[in-house]
Length: 326
Image (cartoon, rainbow, N blue to C red):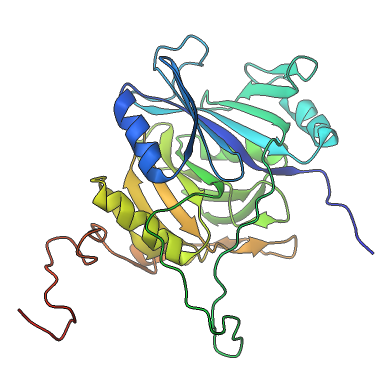
C-alpha cells in the first residue's frame, strides 16, 4: 500500500541575483559546476542537476524589485510546490502582502514581497527527478560499501539548491510571515536566529534568518546540495584551484549535521557546498542554542584547503609520502 505525499512546498525552484560583476559571475558559476542554459546581455541562466535555476541579472534591470541591500545581492527566491492544490493555502496567506499578485491564470505563479522587500514566488515545481546518489558509508555495525572504493571528485555538480540564509532586522516578523506560508521552525537561537524548513517532512532547514546587531536585511549565503562529503571536498578543491576565495571550510555544522565549504560569491554574500543534513518529521522537537563558534561549526578549516597541495594554504607538500622529506 502506498500513500501520496501531502501537498506542500517542496523547496527552492530558483533564485535570482543581481550583480555588476558580469564576467566574474559567468566564470564563477561555470567553476561552481552549474550547467549554462542561456546567456545574453541582460540575463544569465544556470541550473543544477535537478533543474533548479539560478538567474543573474543586471542591477538596474527594471523587471526586478528594489534591492534589499546595496551591491550584488539576491532579488528573488522561487519556491516549488508539489501540485496546484498546494498553491491554494499560500494564496490565502499572501492576501494583503506587499506586491501580491495571483498570476496562476497567466504563468501559474503566486508573487509577493516578503518583509525585507525580497520577491518570492510559488509555482508547481519544475524540478526534475535525478538518478544520482551519494556513496554509502561503512559506519560501525552497518557496512554498506563492499569491494568499492569511495569516489574522488575533480569538481562538483550541485544536485539542487538546498537553502537560503538572510540577515534580518525584523526576526519575529519574518518568522511569522514564513510560518503563515507553511514553513516550520526546526531550531533557533532565541532572539538571534531561526532555522525553518518548508514542510513538516523536510531537510533541517530551507531558510535561516539571522539577526545581528546593527545589521540590516541582506543575503548571507545560498547552499547548493551535492551528493556526499567527498563531493564537498572535490568541489571545494576545484574552486580553490580556480582561484576563488574560501570564507570557511571544509567543516561540519553540529545543528544540522551537514558538511560545508563556503566561498565568496561575486553575485552577493557567500555560497556553500552542503551535504548530509538531517531530515526531520513532525516528531522533531525544536531545540534552542546559544550562539558560539562550536555551535556553528563542530570543526572547520579557516582559509580552506589549497587545491594544488591539498593542504592548508601556505603549507608545502613534500615527497611522495608524508614521511618522505625532500
